[in-house]
Length: 346
Ligand code: AHM
Ligand code: MG
Image (cartoon, rainbow, N blue to C red; front, side):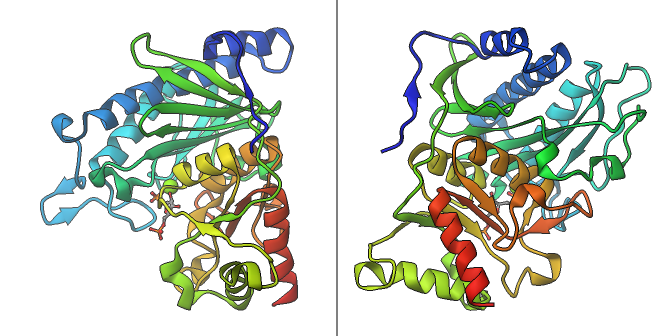
């Protein structure tokens, strides 16, 4: 059972942020930044929720010629729309020195007409977008860094900071309910969107991931492409009670990282996207700066762990905005076990 604590009375995201500001844990600019991202996520939630009625399903671009992002992936209309919503919402507030997104080749400057601030915002505007057209949960992931001193208009190199430098991270999951899960380095907290009132309300303070688990998440169809450590690790998971792990494991795979990590933050588990023969030349499938790092910060703040299999995720030094990494994230003891297999089966 998860040791998460229920919230006694209704605390809106705004109230939570004001209280954190009064306690000296965030400043007004970071508070504004989080409020603006949350507002943009509400707009994305409305677009996602309209589904086919909103005319936003399917691929972007012209028929027969899909629009591609820098990753070489076909963009969905909702990928493009969500990216525009986040860019537009964040450009004018004066809290940012630059933005970067999964959907854009290079970082995005703040237009000259607007003041600039001290923060850098990175996001995956709509993660799991292969699930959009089949009405399965998708989400927005974001990470906030400080802009290096003296820089007012950030360039790509200014974003290349290890995950330990994040001052805030979060995601919104657009599922049966829309939830925002947030950390400013003082625990991980969940807020549920009250659709009638239009505000996020805290529903779990201090999410806590059980240290042990009997549940793993991986795309098993890649098994034949995995490297020896992952082969050995999953073989032992699958061997159940009779095997060296001494217990039966269950498996779940939504193929939306946000949904899979949300389940793990709620009831424990391990999420993995290892190196495999298909993605080894790129370094992995998932992106460090706006997928793995924010999720790792959230999971560590909830008592879990996150690793590449060989290094603590938050200590990886990024070499590019779209750098990819192998990912093992979730219940502490299980992540440590996966890391041990990497040491022992190299
Ligand atoms: P995306 O950002 O292009 O949506 O890709 C990331 C997604 C993750 O949400 C998910 O864990 C993974 O890709 C699923 O990959 P696969 O389809 O290989 O199982
Ligand atoms: Mg993604």
